[in-house]
Image 1 (tube, rainbow, N blue to C red):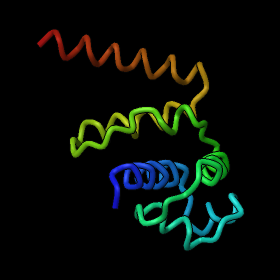
Image 2 (cartoon, helix red, strand yellow):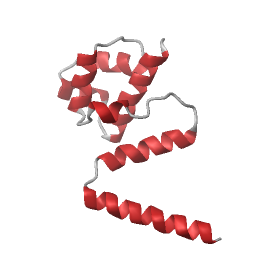
Image 3 (cartoon, rainbow, N blue to C red):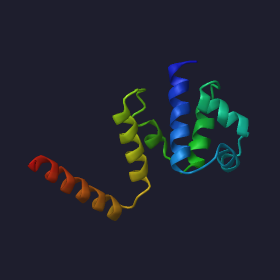
Amino acid sequence: MSDLLKIVGDRIRHFRTIKNLSQEQLALLANVDTSHIGRIERGTSNSSIEMIDKIITAMGVSLEDFFKQTQHSDCRDDELLSTINAKLIMMNSDEKECILELINAVYKLTKKE
C-alpha cells in the first residue's frame, strides 16, 4: 500500500468520523458503493481525483481543507490538532472568535504559573 493511498484513506475516515457518518451513509450521499468507501479508507483502492472530490463534497469538505496538513505522522499532537481544525471548519465566525478567546485565556493562565 502506498503512503499516499493511506493518507487519503485516513483523511476520508477522519472527516467521515467527525461528521458522524457511517461508511454506508457516506456511500449513499456520494452515490458510491459502500465497499469502495471501505477500500479507499483502508488504502487498497487507487481512486481518481474525481471520485475523491465526489466523496469529500458529499461530506461538505472543500478540497483545500481535505488536503491541508496531509503529512502522515504518528504524533498524537498532530491528530489532536487535525481534529480541532476539522471541528473549527464547521463553526461560524462568532463561534471561532469565542474559541480563540478561550484559548487566549487558557494560555494566559498557564503562563502565569
